[in-house]
Length: 92
Figure 1 (cartoon, rainbow, N blue to C red):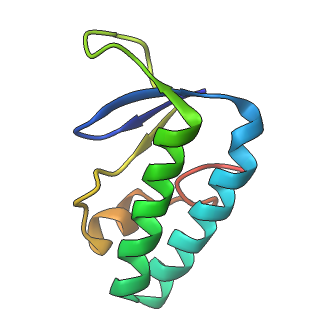
Figure 2: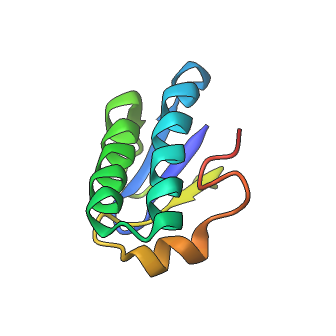
């Protein structure tokens, strides 16, 4: 799966890493729903770090289509709220 972090780039993430990323996504979703800015900031950082750790960065000039798009590290809670679906940012 190819995951893009806006403003940063794309990462190839193996399917076996998605369970952990979904856990992090659920925590982010809960923080957004609660309007908890502190929990939101920590959860967003953990999710993006999880993608960076589990994934392999694509070359900057790569034009591959992304399967998922995640917000940038400096996104606000309102920006992330607009990106959320029923399944969070990462379906599953």
